Image (cartoon, rainbow, N blue to C red):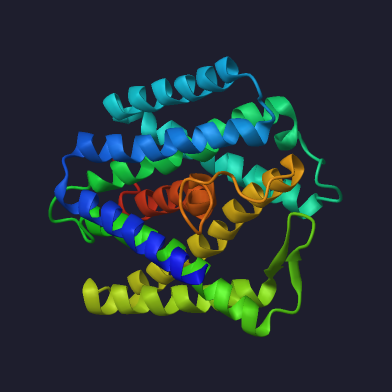
Length: 281
């Protein structure tokens, strides 16, 4: 199983990185959109939709909104802001959680709304960051790759630290396997990544380096929230995985859950740090 997971991950990562650096903006948008629409189809199952026509209609509606924002990127800013508020809401529900079914976001109307705010930013934020102008530091494509690396570092570090030292449960109702030790291990890996990339790749120093590291650590922590929310949805639906598309990993949602929370928060913090008085996105 581990070998299958590694092979699948290498193939998927290679495809995404190749597309990120060599494909046109619209081709890259199409690739990401295809993944997101598969994720939306998986989401309809977790919501409890059973009729194919309802599931297709939901996926189509999400896809049309996504295409509209791709063609009208000025809508990225309100989308990111609403998504950040959504994830703050998820955090509050998670902290107050006494039963899996508690809170608005796991009601049927809440799930209808959540699907859009979980999936659309994961599609559109990389496209917005990719359009950072030449000469920016880091340049747009590298910034997208860095965001992905932060999420992967947090997830990988948490996996190994949790297996080695995990004792204290992070959120036993939503995800019994996750521990605070795992979260700490993931953040240590993110810290190392932020320092190495910031100092040696982009020459960031002083107060800017401190801000860069703080943003990276916060985004790494927020990525855990995306994982927990999808785990909660799966447990309510009685599903082990969101789907079966990716061998060894399950579905698309199983692979992008952490990224769905990290992407809008990273975009919001990055643009307010680097362009606090100018237009962004």
